[in-house]
Image (cartoon, rainbow, N blue to C red; front, side, top):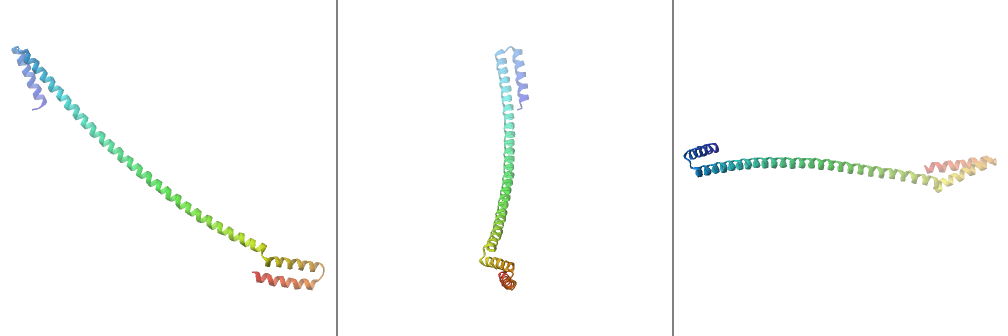
Length: 156
């Protein structure tokens, strides 16, 4: 039996009781109609609450899914940045190691060139050659020059 049919029957019962003067039965019919209306409203409210609860659960689920997606994208981006950082750090470490190696090689070559005993001997011979030439001992200067040229060729 539907709600509308039950209300119609109760209204008809109420009218018949009123017409016969059975006012107690009218009051019972009226209370039955009010109770039926109240139950119908309650059922309607419960249905609305269920629908709203279902919608809320769907919204919460969609929100949680969106949060997971954003978190996954964020994690992916962070991991990419960390990988890029690690790659850059590795490249810089390799570059600095190479620069340090080049600097050390140049430094030690320069030190060796400046402070090598053989080079000092060549400088001493060159000074002797110039001194002999100033004193006009040309043959001795030529001899020292030949000796220094020979040693310079052997150094290289």
